[in-house]
Amino acid sequence: MQNIYQLFTTMDTAFQKYKLMKKIIVTLLGVTLITTSALAQQSREDSLNREAAKTEIWEPKPTKVEPGKTPSDAPSDAIVLYNGKNLDAWHRLGGGKAGWKIEKDGTLTVVKGSGAIETNMPFGSCQLHIEWRSPAEIKQSGQYRANSGVFFMGKYEIQILDSYTNQTYVNGQAGALYKQHIPLVNATKKPGEWQTYDIIFTAPQFYADGKVQVPGRFTVLHNGVLIQNNVDIKGTIQWVGPAVYEAHPAKLPFYLQDHDLDGGSPVSFKNIWIRPLD
Ligand code: MG
Image (cartoon, rainbow, N blue to C red; front, side, top):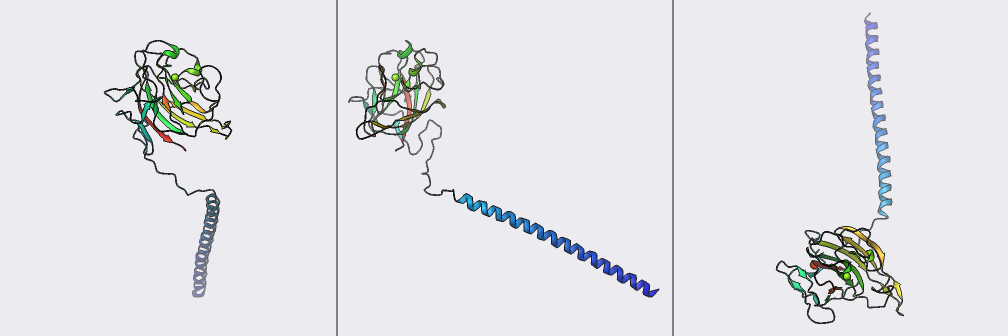
């Protein structure tokens, strides 16, 4: 009996050892499989990272610019052309002192008949921010209703006009590239309310013989709404007849229009800044 008991004891011990060994082997196999799978996954990720790195560009880094506190405020790399204090950056178009009025609150208002005001500095391609306001009480209608405009390089006008309910030809309403491109939508605010233009202007380029090589382009946001989407400039603005390009220098001043025919509706301006893009 003793021998049989010892035999069973020995068999039970062997079985326990077998179970333990099996557990160890299964565990090791599991660990091996997991490790192999993790290594394969890591290898795939390393390979993808190497491929992705081939299309990464790290230098040169874009210049750091401090944005304005609000979209009305000039970023750190902008040239401030009017900040409500003086007209030092401007002169009368054609020569002489700029004759527009600076109100007590810093608003700049057209003085009818005093002439357009032109920047002292010349500009080529640029980003321009300008805020304007038709007077709350305006008279007349059509093109005689709070008409001004930004004449880039003295030749390409983005129209300023009360166009809230005013009826006129649509390629001459607010935000039109005058007589060339109708604004995509009418984003005009009521007379008496401030409005913004954010304009990206690409200057045209000319061959040595004076023919246009690359037409100019405009993108315009009116009160934050896209109204001109990279449209081509067809030539110097014409009131009568088609626009035609005339070769000119790469940089020229721009001016703000005194449309003195609409005598009762002077336009006001504030926060004018520009970022040259060339
Ligand atoms: Mg105009």
